[in-house]
Image 1 (spheres, rainbow, N blue to C red):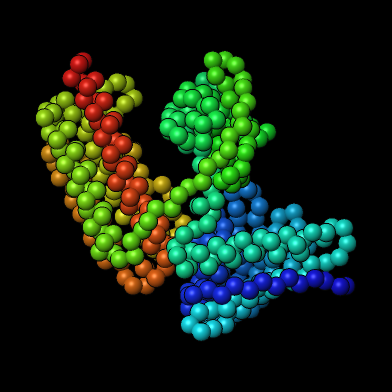
Image 2 (cartoon, helix red, strand yellow):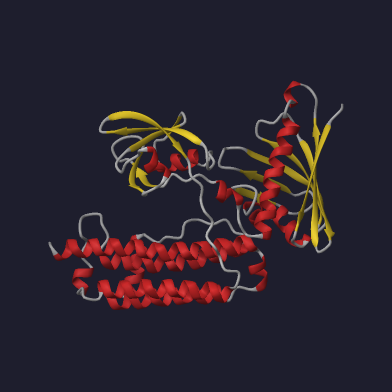
Length: 390
């Protein structure tokens, strides 16, 4: 039976050893290719990869010759049959020439468009492989849509409540307001914040999508042009990165101390309202989250699948209070946690820094966590006002 083979090449300014790792390990594949991956990186080993869209694929390694060549079978969800892929890596003038051949596309109606689709999709993902290796920028992030809202699952109905609409965001420009309840995106029902995340990831920056929402009991629909996500500048020099983070940490600690030190420990332990955190609980949360960041960072550097790092369990708070029972002790503990964060970053090895996408991910989370603490400072200020006027 006559079959079709598609071929595509990319030249990447990275040694073949690192490219081979990105092609064959679960952590490496998640860094540029898919959302989830399981691999047995050996000849005869099996793999499975999946995406937010619900599409997944599986196969078996038929050739495993690091760092020059790997081949495997491929069977994707909904595809008419198994195909074969071979990737070769050839050193070329200090760079690496990657050649991918995808073979086995059959003839007939069920195979119509399959080869063309594969060529198009491999072009996109190999462009991303080159980007994450050469610059650390994951193009999936730059293409990821931005609405510019805070949200949570509605308590009394299906949908998600907008808890915040950022000024100048695509949501505000389109006319969404704080308190609106989103119930659908382009025909997809949204009943929880988790469903919202799954559906929202199917779109790209620049798309215009209809969003259904409820305001004052009336269902309405508007069209929103989704924004993009600008990539922050990340210093290549670790010492410069640590210095930037130190400046943010120092500002955060100074602001926290100035805000909470006038409180008595009794005031700091009082919750402003039922179900809300006391000042001491917020400080414990900051400490446990920072230590969670240390674990998250270690997992990222090792290519291990990661989860959110924020600490908010009562058991975690109890453990913190056992060693830091006072406001002063909590602040000292958090300051030590921040110092350990900087020390961990300063100790990054050349090998870790060469893995640019992971280095960049760590740096971006560092900046995000500095902002995270400032966000909780506003929460502390509100709690203090409530306690002092009760």
